[in-house]
Image 1 (cartoon, one colour):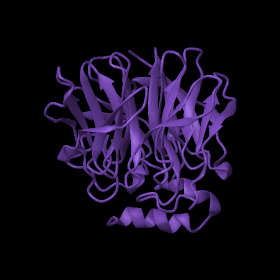
Image 2 (spheres, rainbow, N blue to C red):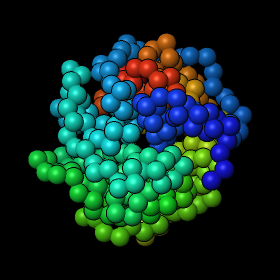
Image 3 (cartoon, one colour):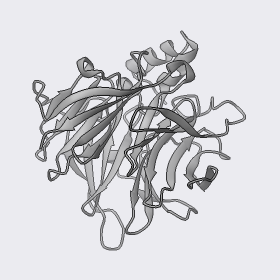
Image 4 (spheres, helix red, strand yellow):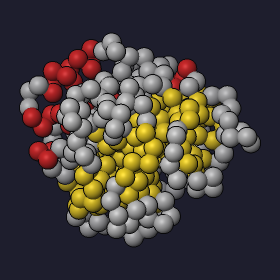
Length: 334
């Protein structure tokens, strides 16, 4: 796959230090090409306040947090991309590793685009079961994995080794999991019981332009919403009555390095992690956006966002800054 200039910069960094293998995780948004459409970000605004870091992670142990799922007790389950791990972060910020996935026999060097094995998207079901994605470039390990409370991780669906499964969303009503593939430019669906995935959408709006395409993924009001890192877009795809995808709607553009996102609860308003710029953006339903958190608040290449009530949880992986990967919390002013 052809690389853009920023992607080349990342690979140069990879060779400089042992821990910088983590810099190539699934959403290296700083390697994205310039976002499609004109940027409309304004000066920093203040829907988020009281931002503070509640957990610091160890970059030397490849603890680059990639995605997050919240539990009712206030803890957070996090994928550490390059470490191939799932961790639980307590409300007080303590970190406990709950699973480490097996390393591929070749070390993951055939993982598309990135060249090492990594854990990516994660969701939590109401019964506490965790579902998460693992990309290795090998047919025996790449896929959708499940971890039941007190159990061991197991793969429940194989995904193409030629792809890079990234974003994950759960529809509890239909017990269906949806998966973005950032290399193949697709969204796949799999029942929570596992089995053979089917391609739900391969719309051209999901494709990359040279690095990583379809990325973050959420379900809201009868539609799938996805980001495209390379194109800097937010997409909405209606789920039709028969389960098939409707026509793709581009809801926002100009979001360079967009990664994961979360809805604020105010209609279709979104908080989005802009990995490369090191910012969190507030995206309005009309597609305009403003910057609401920056490096000054403690962001280090943010990767994902989750909301519980009026608390926003923001993960930073330090893919480029190479210092202080962390979990930040902030108050959402409604």
